[in-house]
Length: 395
Image 1 (tube, rainbow, N blue to C red):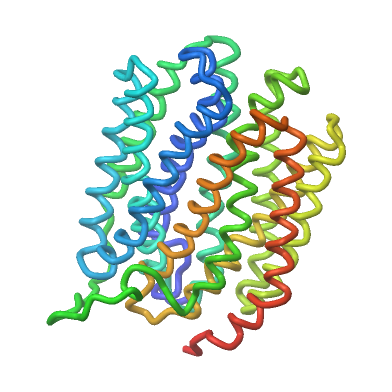
Image 2 (cartoon, one colour):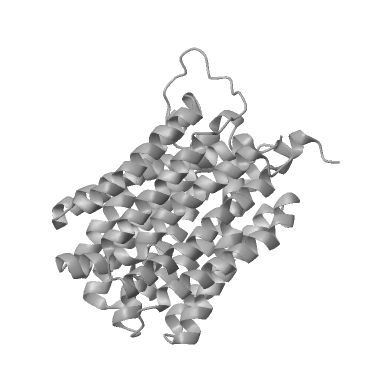
């Protein structure tokens, strides 16, 4: 029988998985439909939509390095609960924002607790995992996000299509975020000795310098997903003439994510991180090329599956890689560095993607992200893979 200390599916792990699901659900419930909300409610142009929505990501980007610092320096549970509470409360701001300016302010401020919560919760997941199951556990942790990514857009599109009530969407996101806060309040993490004495303030306490190239590569992939996830619904409605296909797209994408996470678990258990990453990068690149090169239903839905399969391999591999080059007391910083890089890419993607769509059209924007993903693939095979192998810490 497996020792209790080596159990992967312990109660604390289930709780952080549940909270990760609620974080992702409340986020992806709104993300694909916010461009439509801004267009229909405030008459916003495409570049203005990009500007307003990028504020959320930019704030998360700014906050994440400080989140890593606080998570590594103070009680992780306390940092987590404070972040989740503020994230939960911010959803009420969408219901009260009656102008585009107020909505932009609320959306921008909301990025801060989201960025802090994702860093704190993913670091807590690492803490409650037995060291012998950590690579595998980090891979499965993402399944909760994948399930939310599959379900939330489908629910959101269903409500939009049949009720056409954005307030109902905001209330649902508010409720789900509150459930995550309540679940994590019952966490009983293992004791962790806090650092005593004053440690010098340095860049490495906010950004994992040892993992800079891994973060840079992740930013390339973030650009691509930022454009795709934020402009998919309005692209489907305006260009392809479909109003319910967004939910199906995200469901297929998430099925791909789930299948690849399950299939890649064995490779992660064996420590084959760069191999897992390579499979994911190649598959995702093909998916983005298919999406833009075949602007029809087959290309649209086929790309969803391929991008899902690719990201399901890519994400846990990169997360384990960056944790692999960090010391044990830099786990929060490592997580924040990877998520900061992803946010940076998404922010650039949303901001520049909106301008490209406005002046050059959707085809140009999606060709741009296909090229960016190919560039990220080249960077991995030419530099990032060997960088990780040189810098990883053998434990």
